[in-house]
Length: 69
Image (cartoon, rainbow, N blue to C red; front, side, top):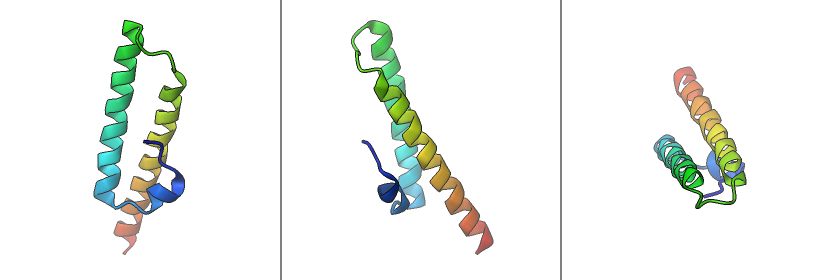
């Protein structure tokens, strides 16, 4: 679920929050798999964290736009 900035900008507030929950759940599952020795591509964790940061940024921008309007 690699979302690019263009994709994230087009998402609604509810979609952004759903995406945030999904990404956090994916990181949790990757960490569990990593501890069990089943997961080898640990770079996915940092990619997902960057996507979380992108989504959080868009959520805060949406909140500011709503409060200014």
